[in-house]
Picture 1 (cartoon, helix red, strand yellow):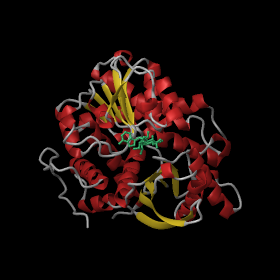
Picture 2: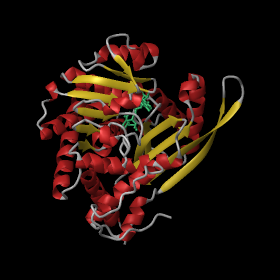
Picture 3: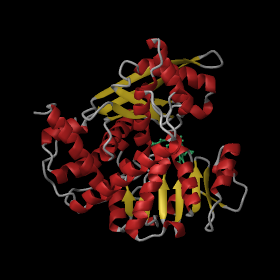
Picture 4: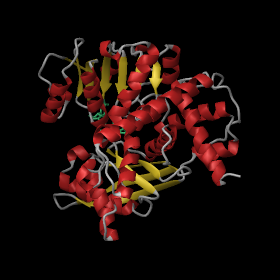
Length: 434
Ligand code: NAD
């Protein structure tokens, strides 16, 4: 059982364990506790907000192409719905765990509150290796998984979206599976869909575009001219590759990128359009045949770039490698890439960390726009979406920066105080908490 902490402990006085947290949910709770300490949150409210509201574990029997049956394990967690329906992606990955999904669901609660959109937090995942599955196998598994979690998802209660190794096609299968049982098209049940079936203009680039907006704001605060800055990006999927491209298009030198195949580096800058083409053709950035040195995937985190964008998985910046990180700004496109110990080291080193719950909130922001468009059956053009995304991200950055100054703390804890304060207020007003 989660321990109730005393109401007010100075974050500086809180002992931080030197070992890497055993799992992302511990990281999430540590981040929550730091904000709760500052806010002097009531112990009862802490207990409410620390715990996921619902956790569903499902078995997903799937017929494979060779006729055999495999049973995958899947999860859907709703962390909090005080401010609106749960919202959050579905991850397909061999290392998915329930604790990882709980952490990601809680980060969604705080993220939606930080950018002030009317959603709570949810997340889902299936333990599988989509790289070793055919499209037909993926479709059958997705449809069965959707059917299993259909008892808790819906446009008015919990709205999934893509995450690692899921994409608009997977969302289309999910939407279709729910629609089949209803007998009509339920567009608003998932977001991140293809445009042809109720997707939003601009959703594909939303996470990266939002992240870049926060990088520009962070550069301003640090007196860095983005046009003369350099960047490194770890992870080259939806968030990472588009972020790298947008930074490169803005004139930043992107000097290192990586994916599961490893990293590439060129101090003079990489032509990101060609790296994207190489990744499409060969499956990895390592397939880039132009001028670049091959480096280990993890080494990308330590190159001498002004801006570091972790855009892969959680727990990659730790007490072990944090001392070697040279960036002046870290913008967390990924969820949970930094452990609390690494966070403390970055703070001491004066590195400005734009936390995940702000840096990658562009994705859920445009998911919110998609949901609104689906419910209204009235669709916006790309410029309108980007204009509102930009405003949301700039306001988010301003408010988080202000909260960090007000509490004399990091951007992460500033963001968390803002988010936890908003969710606690909603919980209190609704009367879910006496
Ligand atoms: P994706 O599946 O499109 O891409 C993941 C990428 O990470 C791939 O290029 C993969 O090769 C790479 N990768 C995995 N392990 C790696 C490692 N150890 N080193 C280097 N690269 C590695 O996933 P995505 O949607 O881009 O998500 C990436 C991160 O961004 C996740 O943390 C996700 O939760 C977060 N995020 C995504 C969105 C979104 O809209 N897609 C929104 C918010 C947050």
